[in-house]
Each structure stands twice: as structure tokens, then as C-alpha cells.
Length: 258
Ligand code: SF4
Image (cartoon, rainbow, N blue to C red):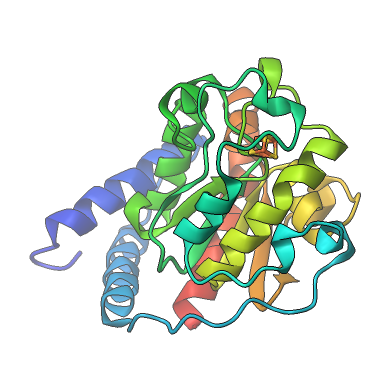
């Protein structure tokens, strides 16, 4: 281990080890710990020295999912523009029971964007994505790859809570996902991480099960896309954390190599 590891790096290493411990892994070689600290330092240095990326125009070609939607053909210059256009949205029936529209939050210059399915009860109450138990686990997942939550951007496929946390229906996804695509077009991340089936199937426009989508690197409009299990699923199935850790390592390596 370096003589004077930075306190922030130690915090991140702690989160990293906690994630492993929760995954049932309880032994670490000293070399691996020292390697993790070095890697953390290099990722942080890279992200500090990274110049703000110029905003590029949104791709002009829309996929079939988005072709029928007017808003998706607009070229936005900021997330605020997308949010303004969403307004007090009543484009689908999920508006009926919502407390807040949960648009998304995080760093508008994020290299990494997480996309979940939709808000839950805590998120609906607070108007912010991933703030409940699953959100806390997502924070630990982010920290396990030596990043901070405020470095990434987090949003969902649908912006209003489906009643009883049910899976959003096809027409709800069709109504809301053009706004997700517009968010991603503004953000222009290097890596998109889809959390769960709905996000992965929506962005990749496939019906393939999540178990077959994860473990690979896909493409989405110039970004690399990695699909993994939703943190809420991990809370119910902790054994899947090992698979998620493999997916997180892929993300870390994509970000480290660019
Ligand atoms: S889920 Fe999306 S499309 Fe439906 S009402 Fe909410 S913001 Fe509008």
C-alpha cells in the first residue's frame, strides 16, 4: 500500500471492499489492495484532467422506437431544455398517481450514465432517482469502481412511478423513453450502464433476457452500453452481485482505456 494514501481513496477502497464483502468475498491479497489504490488514483487523475467535452448535435437518425415521437426529433442543447419540454407531463397514465416527475440527476458532463427502470416510492416522494435502498446499493456500486455518485448521471426509462412498482407497460415506455434518449443525446456519455431488463431492452430495442444481454459490451449511439442487474434485484438476490461486479469491472476498464 502507498505510504500516505489519500483519505478519499481510502474511502473508495472501503466501499470497494464492502461491496466485495456483501458479495461473499472475504479474502484479499495485499497486492490487490495496493493495486486498487493505484487504480483509484489513476482513474481520479484522469477524470480531473479531462477537459469539458464539446456538446455535439444529437444524431439525426432516430430509431423506430422514437420515430413517431415529435420531441425526439428536436436537437437539444441542454438537459434543462429537455426538462422544460417534458413540463407537467401527462403523456401517459403514470401521471395519475405520481407525486413528482423524477427527471434524473447528476453531473451533466458525466462520462458514465446509469439508466434504471422507473422511480419507486422514495424517489416519487423526493423527486430524485435512486434514493431508496436500491439507490444506496447503487452508490456503493459506483464507489466500488472508484467513482463518486456526483461524477455520474442517473435517470430512468419512465419518469413517473408505476403503481406498486410494477414494470412499466409498453405504451408508457413508448411515451416516456424519447425523453431518455434526448437526455443521453445531450449528455453524450462514453458509457451507458442499463440497470435491469427494461432499460436494456428499451435502449437496445431487443426482447432478449437480461441474463443474455449482460456480460457483453453493446453500442448505443456512439456510446458503449453495458447491461447489468437492477440493484433492487440484487437486494433480493445477493448472489447476483458477483455477476454485477464483473459488469462493473468492464465499465471501469472502458473508462480507464478511453
Ligand atoms: S411516465 Fe413519462 S410520459 Fe408518462 S406521464 Fe410521466 S413523464 Fe410523462
